[in-house]
Length: 67
Image 1 (cartoon, one colour):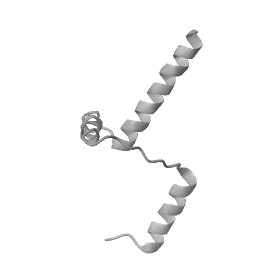
Image 2 (tube, rainbow, N blue to C red):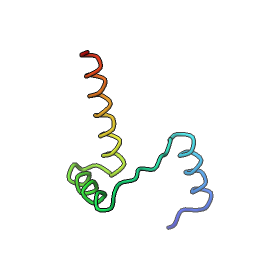
Image 3 (cartoon, rainbow, N blue to C red):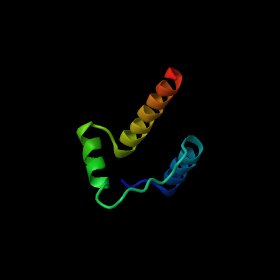
């Protein structure tokens, strides 16, 4: 059964309140390997990218603290 318009509005309203969104651009041919890596790790593409960013931030903070 398809979702009602009211349900879709409620989902959009929650998403707008709970999440921030941004666009990531990659060169042609780079997206498929990223998708494959996400699938191989058992993660959604979004989760894979967010986790990669978090890991990078953690490494940078560790490097900064070591200075």
